[in-house]
Image 1 (cartoon, rainbow, N blue to C red):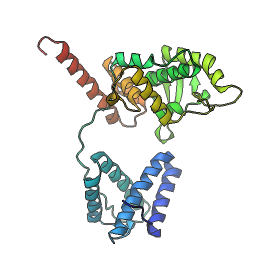
Image 2: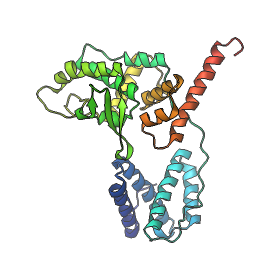
Image 3: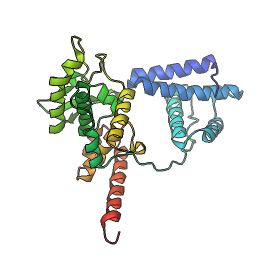
Image 4: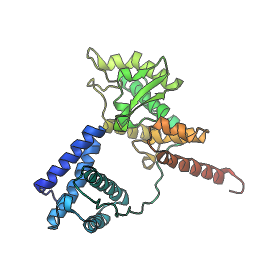
Length: 304
C-alpha cells in the first residue's frame, strides 16, 4: 500500500494512543512503531476507500479490512494487526471516547502450528566451539554464545547487558526483558568461566583506552546490535556445518528451553527463566521436546 497522508484526526488519535502506551506501559520503541504502523495502515485504507474515520469505524468495516489483509499477508501478520486494533479500540472505550468496541466481533485467523527452530545438543556444542579463541573478538563471541545458551536470553537482552547487570560471584545476571521487566537468571559454571576469560583477556584488548559500561563490546567500543549478532550466529553456524534452515536469531534461546525440558526441568521454572508472562507461550517447547523424543524413538527403536 502506498504511503498516504492520514486525516489529521486519525493521526492525532494514533499519536495519543502510542504516547499513552509509552507513558503507562513503558513499551519498547520497536513495539510502539509496530502499533503505529498497523493503525496507520488501517487509517490509510479507510481514507482511500472513502470510509469512516478511525474512531467511527464499524465492526463490518474492520472485518473488511482484515479480509483485505488476508489476501496480502500471512495469518501471523493478520493476528498482529488484530491485536493492535483490539488494544486501540479497547483503550478508546476505557477513556470514554467510544461506547462500544467495534473490534469485539473480529475473528482470529486460523494459524498453522509452527514450532520454534532449535538445535540438538551436539549441534549446540559445535556452534559454541566455532569462534577462533586465539583472537579477542573470537573470545568475546564464545562468551556471548555461552551466555545465550546458559541463560536463554533474548538476543536484544544479551546485547543490552551492562557490566553492572552481572554478578559473577553470585553466578547470576539481571536481564531487562519486554515491558522493562527485570528478572534474575543463573549463569552456570561454563558461562561464568567464559565471561571471566573475556573480561580478563579480551575486553581490555578490544576496548583499549576507551570507556564503556556495555558488557559485550565491538571494536567501536560500543554495544553490538541485534543484527550484527545474528550475522555472527549465521557465520559460526556455517563453520559448525549447521544448516541455515535450522537457524533463527533466537535459536539458542529455543535450544536452552527445549534442552532443559528434555532433562526434566519444570515448565514453570523454564517460564520464569525465559521471562514469559504467560505459561502458554512456554508450553510450545514441550511440543518441540515431544517431537524430538518421537523422532529418536522412530530412529532407534527396533519397531519404530
